[in-house]
Image (cartoon, rainbow over all chains, first blue to last red):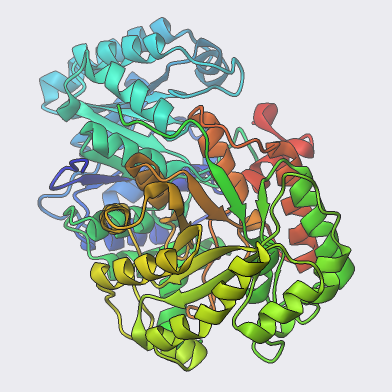
Length: 309
Length: 309
């Protein structure tokens, strides 16, 4: 029998990675309510917003207002995405205590995404990481396109290892390995994670899967078997993927929690409260929830459930 | 690294388990076209229809016409569901060469589903299995509710083992273990399969998952790691679940094939042809495909794909 971790920390990325890729505009007050509802479920990390330029991500132009408005619960971390020193300054001006920086494992993707080589991106982050260290701000790092790239196709595992090692060496306490376009399958996810864990401690790694091809939860399972104990997810499966329109988003937090709890793995999350938050968000977005658990428990909540057939 | 089988045989159950639980009525000619399209993709087993009483399953009242109409490809098996001797006679009258019988692991479910105890169901099948053996007809057995029951809740692993062993002993060449209501998670699926494989050879076992809570593909992965090499699936994720309305159906064959091929596991299936068949079926049913691969590749087929973002 494979061993699974006793406890998994979920990094809820719905308010950032989810909303930045949704077409529907969400009011600032609703974004604040979303973060508060999520942190009330027992989640220990809720990525609150992004201080990327509003020109790039207009959906999150109200990052400062959102961050200022949330009710920060003790024991919950609220990282925000930061692209450069300007973003860092904006975030710090409203009291941000944890940030996330990002680069790709694919040169082609990084050039298209931020108009810089991977090395240039890392150089751009160096002063941010220095300032963060001086300010006592924790930094999470994202590596995107770890299992494939919409522009160059294959991404070498060695490239993922190199970028993850650099981010960790620069001071990121955790590096999240993201299959941005959702093309990966469990055996490749496992191979990639194992290779990175040869250079960066597994305790400093997280995995981040998109469900574009329905593989996200199976990929998470394979990675749990390799020993990872931090998993990114987005409530209601929000996110879509700007590189494959019509495709589905991040792995749904509800479905992940259902799996973990069913396997006896603790998360600290109240699944019923989480599913309710997901349904509320889906109604705000004017679409069906991307979480199967959200749908199944909605049917039950309508009195239309298990014994109906 | 976990070992996966080199090759998996997929039992396509869309034309039966899928359509019997879909609300939309499908014309007989379309059912025939569906089976033919599926067997053209390289699938080696396509469950064609059900000879259960039309009173119980009106959607498949045209079972004899469907079976008579399909173009039987050499090397492809076309099992049909048979509930009793009357069904067996109807099936044989149109030349059926393989059947499937079914019972539950849950007493409460079996009583509600067929108004008989599990032992009574098995006794009812005994003469069918005897006739099949005499006629050279192969028999597959289904055990439902192996990871939970909508009426009694928990289902003991020992009950699953007992029923699977009985079906195998009675002559079923293969026993499919079904999580009818989709509540199972990978660790429990693995434990259940391992227990059954202690009494029935793994080579005579298949797994059958519904995606009600989004767990189906992760459950398949866990079971592949245990050594199972036959997996049931339904094109376009058809099926729903009559015991949890609004819930999603069988694991989508497209998503399963994508995972297996991505892991280097052979299936013999042409994924592009399969995804096209799934989209065609979804359009017949007047709903979106339940396959994420179907959706993602539809976007690509519309010229709206990977490089669009």
